[in-house]
Length: 327
Image (tube, rainbow, N blue to C red; front, side, top):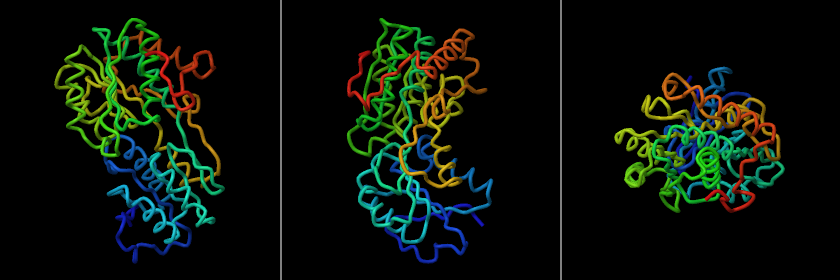
């Protein structure tokens, strides 16, 4: 039996409820698709790891539009799926309305805090991982100018931006970080053409390392950087392999672990913080980017990682103070 049961929002779920005695967990992907090579795909990998290790099955659903969020949650809850994990802050308001109607169903939401007795809110310290990426970008940059391209212009993505800028400026205080966002609607997560155009514009202004925190849009950023012969920084999933030797690193956000833990251990209501010290975020170093990592860069990363974990270095959290002090 396949480890997944794909559902489409708005489609009748009859015949998809399964026959297992235990409730099947479920995973709902945000807009951008399961195989965005970034945030959603990281969640998928966590669910797949759980299925492979346990032999269990789970339901999954890919969103087709914003209007389907509430319907998707209610339909899965009514099929008996438990727990139901969803990726993305945009589920916040809908989950706050739906969760009280299904008190026996456990929900987990990634990247948003929802205060309900049957909801676990999983948040990450993206700014900490991005700080490490900023250090690496500054040490790799020849021009002293880096770029940041975000997806949807929301406070969550400003966490990535500010952490990256803070890390970059810690190494090159007189350096510059160019900043662009691809939009103000969820379509901003899935526009690789616009991502590529923004990257080319930043390259024309001198950027020789560009960090993309934009979901599927980032694929266009990484491609444009590789085509221009400059370095990029991937996000969420390890994207180093997409352009070996051209992706300096990827700021990995262990969404896979969040999904795996929810499927394995169930949901503990409240807020779960996955920070650098807990392995929730980090920078990826593997065979694809190892030649780009100098001993000095590795030492700087290791030193910053230890100081962030100990509290000696405090990386600004845009969610608690909506300013970016290093810009």
